[in-house]
Image (cartoon, rainbow, N blue to C red; front, side, top):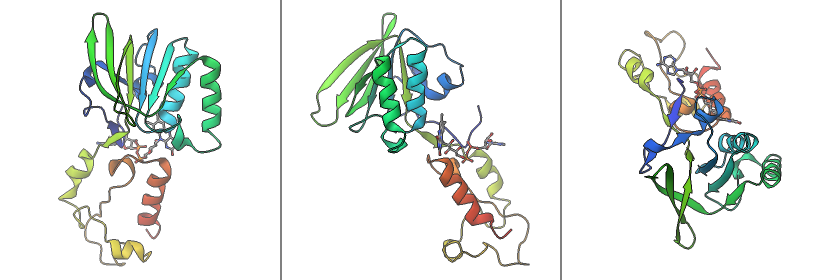
Length: 202
Ligand SMILES: Cc1cc2nc3c(=O)[nH]c(=O)nc-3n(C[C@H](O)[C@H](O)[C@H](O)COP(=O)(O)OP(=O)(O)OC[C@H]3O[C@@H](n4cnc5c(N)ncnc54)[C@H](O)[C@@H]3O)c2cc1C
């Protein structure tokens, strides 16, 4: 799948044994009987992935940073997710981060650390899924940069003044801008706002 960003997993020791939420949501990975999902972001992607795993009949533990699950999804959304988790028997483990994942016979052994106490715990599951946002996929931007009239940069003074990047009649060739997830892992609103501010006068 080609996107503005790619799942950010390589920071994790043992990431090669893990799946990401895109694998589950796209149906490209098989859901196993027992699953640990680590959510380092707190947004809709892990929240709805958890629902899908539970609806599929998996025994699910959702471990996450922060005090309640799905905390970035907002007041109107997270109570609904939590209600579904309680109804489906999803085990919720707040204030933990995933340290590493190792093979253990036919299963995976995950090491979790309590962020408040430092206490370390182990989990044995059939599958580990990790959500940690995306890293920018900027190969197209880099390939086009040298040929652009602005070397791919944004004139911040003109942007903040609400002016077009290049004064009318002065454009030589093409301008190139990087927006959305190709800059950093954010959301659809940021991608739209980035683009609108740069393109509104074209
Ligand atoms: C599972 C999931 C759930 C999400 N839920 C939400 C949500 O509820 N609310 C929200 O606001 N955000 C959500 N997001 C985040 C949101 O989808 C992204 O922040 C947003 O799509 C970023 O937009 P973008 O245009 O920067 O990148 P993208 O939407 O990823 O678009 C990039 C485009 O560039 C194309 N492309 C990339 N490289 C090349 C290349 N070399 N040549 C040609 N084309 C190329 C890709 O095919 C793609 O069409 C979610 C993300 C995921 C993964």
